[in-house]
Image 1: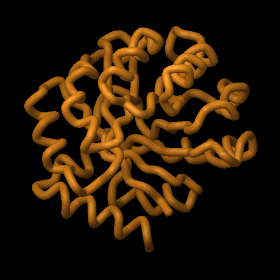
Image 2 (image 1 turned 120 degrees about the horizontal axis):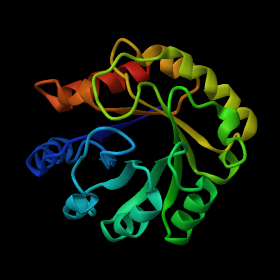
Image 3 (image 1 turned 60 degrees about the horizontal axis):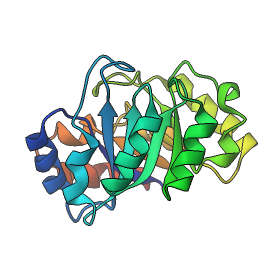
Image 4 (image 1 turned 120 degrees about the vertical axis):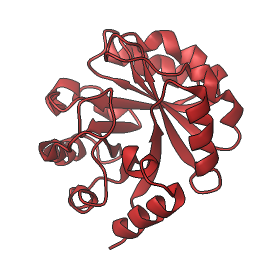
Length: 211
């Protein structure tokens, strides 16, 4: 079964609240994209903005930041259940994973389109989830890069237990080829929030994942 996880990328608290309201009762997990203006050019809301929603959703922080270690305690206090950070960040990935686990949260490591599985092979077995970026991080609505799907089998060859997810470029036109690759979680942003009815858009995507 393929799980759909909405992703919220915004710098406005009002927009966060609107999108969370639209998702309430429709999904369990929500990914919050956090940007520091250094790892990617833009900035986002602070992770503390999601504290109000810690009881309504299972929250994941996707840290598009240079120093994820600085965010771990903040995420924990904000009610985040899983932290996904980028393997390309400046902090040592193994240290970041260990600190997240010690803080009692699930772990995830994200790979930009150009990053190879070989670059993270040593830490794949000790993370709960690998998040493949189907676009370049930092902006929603980009064109999907299908070559990233070749990484799915490579990750499974290293660890059959690790969840493999895809974030970026997921929509009604691309979801079929994504599912065929063996992806079990898809993270969706613009394909939901650029529609007039978020609930209807979510149902349409859910229907396509079952075909």
